[in-house]
Image (cartoon, rainbow, N blue to C red):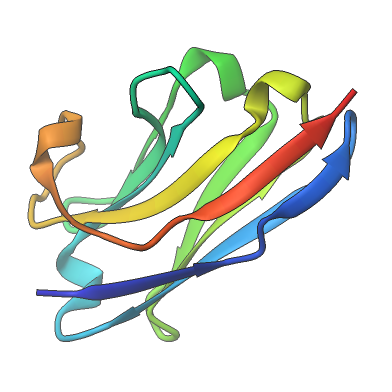
Length: 124
């Protein structure tokens, strides 16, 4: 099991940027597929971005963030990042870091370890 702690959320104006970080503790961080999820009030949780590593780097982004969000990982630091630029009010949500014990990026249900979440609020 891996423990995850997110940081970097906050309040930003539309068009601004934020970088979220997720520090992981536990063994074999590099073997996990890592993802960032978000949940806005009244909406279902969605997989925003994910990165797998074991079979070569694979990336996934939900269409609404392509070109604006970048997921990356530093296996030496056991950390995964989500760089967000050109933020929009509709990006407002609680963002969660999650880990899946899979070699490839799959559905939300694959992600069995979650952080506590960090609030991102984008004002118009």
